[in-house]
Amino acid sequence: MTIWQTLKIVWGNIIKNRMRSFLTMLGMIIGVASVILLVSLMQGFYTNMLDSYADMGINNVSVTINGRNGNMMLTEADMYQYAKDHSIAIKGVTPTVFFQGTIYKNGEKIENSSMKGVDEYYTQLIKKETETGRTFSYSDMSTQQKVCVIGSYVNQRLFGGNAKNGDTLSLNGEELQIIGILKQSSDSSEWSSDNCLYIPYTTAARLYGFGSVSSYEFFIKDRAQVSSETNKIKEYLFHTFRDTKAYNVSNMVDMLKAIDGEMSILTSMIAGIAGISLVVAGVGIMNIMLVSVSERIKEIGIRKSLGAKHRDIMRQFVLEAGATSTIGGALGIALGTVLTIEGGKLLKINAMPTTSSMVSAFCISVGIGILFGYLPARKAAKLNPIDALRSE
Amino acid sequence: MEKEALIELVDLYKIYSVGDTEIKANNGINMTIYRGEMVAIIGKSGSGKSTIMNIIGALDTPTSGQYLLEGRDVSKLKGDDLAEIRNKTIGFIFQQYNLLPKQSVLDNVALPLLYARIGDRERKKRSMEVLRKVGLENKHKNYPTQLSGGQQQRASIARALAGNPSIILADEPTGALDSKTSKEVIDILHQLHEEGNTIVLITHDRSIAAEAERIIQISDGTIVFDGEAKEYNHDNMADVENSMG
Image (cartoon, rainbow over all chains, first blue to last red; front, side):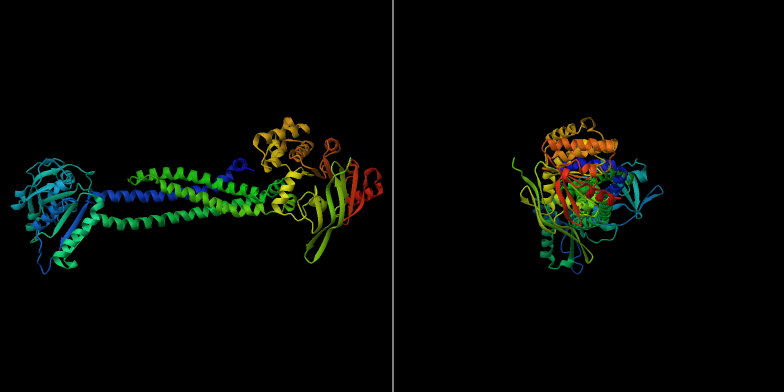
């Protein structure tokens, strides 16, 4: 008997017991759908996270100099020179002064803005343009001007979107004059890169108690070179300080690699837990197949008396289990896809069912169906034809 | 015309072990059935005739002795080899018809051909031919439950014929039928016999056994009569029938 002929018989049996077949499939449907849903939502969250990290500068290498015995030993000029010497891979470097603060204006305040003291090349390096006004100039740096460039979120919150050049705001009690407003680059929400405020690094160092600049951001042209350039910078610094404690070099790419590793462990764990439901569904299929074999002992006896061989009976029952789980798996993919898309909308993340989760969930469900169909099928195939014929 | 031995049972024993006791279902059976014969094997319940039928039908194998089928010793075969013999050589007709209720008459009749791996078109053609032979060509799309008992038995005869087997093995073929439909079934068997088929009837029914040319009576696992039907002592037969209660 060919596979095709067996499939026709199998299909007939599934259709004739459609209620039972559906209930048997239900386990598979839920199992496959949950694997797809969970894995895809994880991926969606992860992609969202990556996007926000990319906003924060995934091509950057951050260098913090602690110095030795209070001696920084390296100045801005050294860093500019280093960037210039490595201009094949490095787009530029900017001294950075990080500080905390609260921005006040018109009785409103923002406490969690990303605030940095930067140099005149910074906005260009992070590819931001001003909506109105200008960015910093060399003289802003050299004369430590109390000026600032703000992001669109700050503009929206404190000025209702109507900030003009020359308007002032208060930062930690210091009056700063706005010279430029950046174009919206993200969605202008509180957690986006639009919630930012930049001042000249020299000003920041003076106002907020840093005697000299100790942080730098290097901008690498190609993301693929971030790791190798990081190592080169480390070598350079080690050459200067001969002490790894005197500086700290980090980048987002290496950090993301670590996160990526942890994420994939987490995703596999979640997929594994959802996968357990597939095994449970497989046991359900085995149970129903055993019932099905018991009900059809007479049929098996008749088939054997007419010349059905061991493999013919095996094939019929294994294919029935396989077909049940295959249909269940396919329906599960459909359900999982719908749930993922709807769930993504609900959670406001961009979640699409991943091909790998669909393919693997489907293959596992088919495999489990065949695996768990094997035992009942063997039971059927091993029946003695005389006893089987005699049964009612 | 030289008679060709189709079935040869040589010193055949079948012993079942039930716990410690041994039941000798067949106790040294020797018989030869020739191609083209119509033979009735009769015996009361527990006489061992069902065991003989199972062995002849390749559903079972003897404990010792030989079963030569078309000259080939099949007494030591197992599993799939026996299935092959049943498929190619034996056509079963059962008392309870044993049609698959969820398949059409045509699909039922085509089953032996399906297991013989005959292609779709050829299978359908041959199945329709045998259905025509038993007068059921108009019912091929029906399900067995939509047919009368006599029609179901004719369908099962068609199924037995479909694989063009060497032996038609009929186990109480009229046991579940009234006398009128029994006659129809017997007529078909006669017709098949006249066409050259070898027919082995297993029965306890005097009138059915009398339809055969030759009668073999089994009692306590041994042959107590083997000869032409017209020579058969009807007192023996009465004995068989009485014991059937």
